[in-house]
Structure formats: structure tokens, C-alpha cells
Image 1 (cartoon, rainbow, N blue to C red):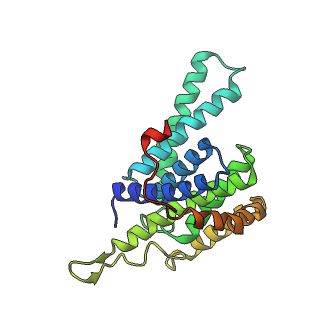
Image 2 (cartoon, helix red, strand yellow; image 1 turned 60 degrees about the vertical axis):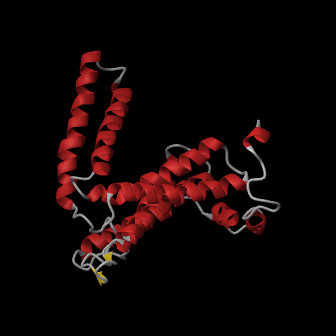
Image 3 (cartoon, helix red, strand yellow; image 1 turned 90 degrees about the horizontal axis):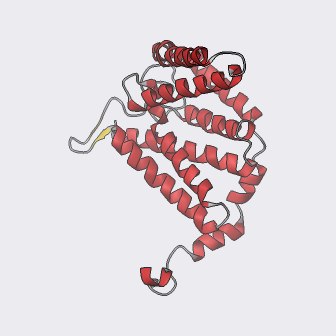
Length: 243
């Protein structure tokens, strides 16, 4: 399978292309474009959270432990002393980072259900729901956030499949087909649960009408076609002209 650096570069390339297209549409501010790009890169490393030795899962649980402790301190801030709040934050971090992390790694198998198309949809829809209900962003922006997570996630899976083909020996490795899958027949209950959770997130997500209208807008398509290639000559605007 592809290594961590390859996943990062691949996800960054796809996300960068996507954000460039949105930039040309001149619809979103630069802060939103930067957020889309970052979410795409995060999506590109998400599939490896099922490996206890991977960098993404350590980042994820470290961050989750810190954020959980922060919210607990905010919630109990008016009731406890400074020392108690620091101890509460530390205890919550240790619980998330080690106890929950240990349970998670026991329940998951590397290149198992997390390396699948329904998992990509699960994380994508989860991002949409989180963006709308927690961060209260607009519906169109929320769906684009989820789309970039999905693009990064699918880029990771595609790279893993490509690296499952040994071009030197002209053979297909045993890992071929385990990334871009629809689930696992060896764990039917977990697969069914993943589909159920994904369906629940879709139900909780806002209607995608504005997102679909944006994606299939003929005016947007004409604009992108007009700006696909230079109309006069390549790089006709110099750096001096920009200032």
C-alpha cells in the first residue's frame, strides 16, 4: 500500500485542484477555500486511523483528548477550582488517549471496514452534520466540507489500490481490492452497522439541494471551460504587472 507521505501528497494534489476550481468560481472567501483544502488533506489520512501504529490515529486521539478536556473545563469552569480543572483536563486526556484508544484499536482491523467506500461516505456525512449543527456554517459550505473529506478519503483508497499492483513483477498483490470495497463479508454485522450509521447521518444532514444546484450550474461549467486554457498566450501576466 502507499505510505503516509504519498497519501498526504495525493490528497493535497486533489484538494488543491478542487479549491483552485472553487477559487475560479469566485464564490467563496479565501478562508473557506483554505478550510476546504485542509479538510481534503485530513480526509486523505483518515483511513489509516484503524492502524494503532499510524501517525493519523495518534494525532486524532491526542487532539480528541485535548478538545474533550477543553470542553469539560468550559462546562465545569464555574464550579471547580483551578487545580481541580487542571486535574479534570488531564484525566480526560489520559482516558481518551489511552483507554478509548486501546478499545478502538481492539475493535478495528487495519485495512478493514475503515478502508471502504461506505466509510468514506460516513466520514463525509459526519463532516456535513458537524459543520451545520456544531459550527453553524451554511448548507452549501457544509456539503462542500464533506465533499472534500470524501475526495481525500477516496484518494487514499485509490492510491492503496494502485500500490497493490506490482508493475515490476507484473502481478497483483493480495491486498488488491481491499481498499475500494463496499464492506467486509467477514464482518457482516459491522458492515451492516456502518451502513446504518451512514444512513442515519444522511437523515440528519440538511438537504443537498443548494449543493447540487451549485455543482450542476451551467453558468459555472461555462466559466470553468472559458478559463480552462489561456485565451492569448501562456503566463502573459508577469509578476510585475500584479503589483
